[in-house]
Structures are given as C-alpha cells and as structure tokens.
Amino acid sequence: MMPLRLGILVSGRGSNLQAIIDAIEAKRVNATIAVVLSNKKKSMAMERAQQQGLKTIFLDPNPFTGGVESRKAYDQKILEVLKEHEVQLVLLAGYMKIVSSVLV
Image (cartoon, rainbow, N blue to C red):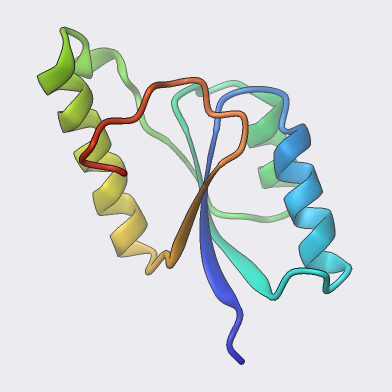
C-alpha cells in the first residue's frame, strides 16, 4: 500500500509534529509528510520540519483578518496549498487557529 500523503498544520513547539515524524520513521504509520503549513513564520515546529528536510510553508494570516469571511478566505488558501501538494489527510498538530467549514 502506498504511504498516505499528510499535510500538517502547526503553530507552536512542534512536539506533536515530532511524534508524527517519529511514528513514520519507526514505520508505525504508513505515511509521508507532503507539506507542513504554519500561520507563524518563526516557530519551533517550523524549525523541526526544516531540520527534517520537510517542505514548509508559512501562510501569513494578517491579510485575512476581519471575521468569518476572512477566516474562510484564509482557509481557502490553505486548501489550495494542500491540493497542490496532493495531500490525502490533514493533521492539526498544535495548530492554534479556528478552522472554518471551508477547510473541514
């Protein structure tokens, strides 16, 4: 069976991300991390991902402030990135933003 392509959304320290990386490396999970997305440019999670050689993308939430419609527009951008990287499963690993119905 082909490994599941993961998209992981992070915001903080990256301990959840590290647990996922460890599970993949130990072959407890048949997956590959296609992309790690963050709403924070500087975070330990992004550093961890970069140290592992993973594709990382910072998506600045600042242009998307102003209520529910802005949140949906931000989530639409996330969705575009996930599709671009052919993600099959999205994991929120310490992601500290409320997601809208667009992403769910």
